[in-house]
Image 1 (cartoon, rainbow over the protein chains, first blue to last red):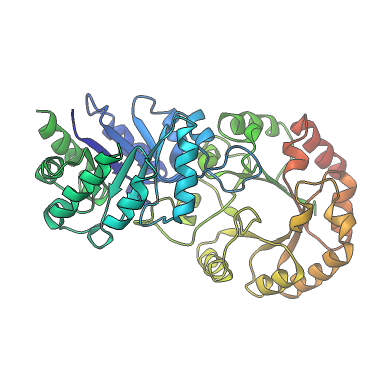
Image 2: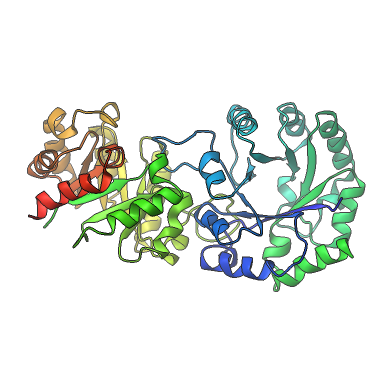
Length: 219
Length: 219
């Protein structure tokens, strides 16, 4: 199975608004990309209607349904526009553990996928017991930097992988992932895939970067 | 000057996703509606690109710019898609006063309009000192109900109006507003307009309801 690649667009200017559309139009050129997931900001989610051929995820989701919820992004809404999964608890959008629990519970009854982010092994232990589909391990101090988590924290990735597999949760790793080797190392340590943001989005040529990562993997 | 009418779509099923588009297509039929503002949920904001003839506002906005802000809705992004204002601190999306202050400051340097909600006279006093463009007074206990704020709290609206005008802030009132008379009463008490959600959106015929409100006012 190919490594899963989640691209977080964050709120970078070149990946938001009209630029998000331009970027997706570029990324659309990649063939056979069922393993790639594009995580869009709240205001760009409707782009999923224009890109039904791509896997579009949200960067955050709430656990309410439809109703009097000003400012909310529900799974019901997301599914109605063909967005079938979301990041949750990203280090830039942290939640209380009780809200994480409620959101995971809601996701299970709504056939909705969650990638729940965790910053350390204690969080991985707590969250994996709630059995989300994925946990993304991202040490906060490495996010956006040049040192990849697979180089800096191999032992934690190995431990995290054991904890996750014991709970039937897939592990993703993120932070500093920029090369094919970073991805291969992560997979060898037991991860199912990676979560990448600046490594692709802040590259001078995001499309070339993403092709180099996926092309090498598939080739 | 016509009363300002802000319609909060909240996250009602008939006003979210593909239904938000259908509803805006209906509302678009109203002529001469520069005084009407449609407040859309985060996931529907890109509809502003399809409805450049309507005033589209956001239901919430953050005070960061572009950058590594997962799950964020910035004024920079909103302005780039022709959304030039937002609700803030709605009772269903409450903020700390310090975050309200930072968001108002950011709005002033970015030519962005804010409608800051307040639940009581103390909050109106605190927030009006920060001089947002609008304060919307919505007593929490009346939201979504049948008793209009203009009937239930005329004295508070009068006091709020004095506090606001002393700080060069326009007052809107909300909660239970459903008829032309509710709007007229609010204006007579010193408000510049109203914030309506269920009164229009939950009506069996939202377009007819909105026409009856605006038609009577303009006629």
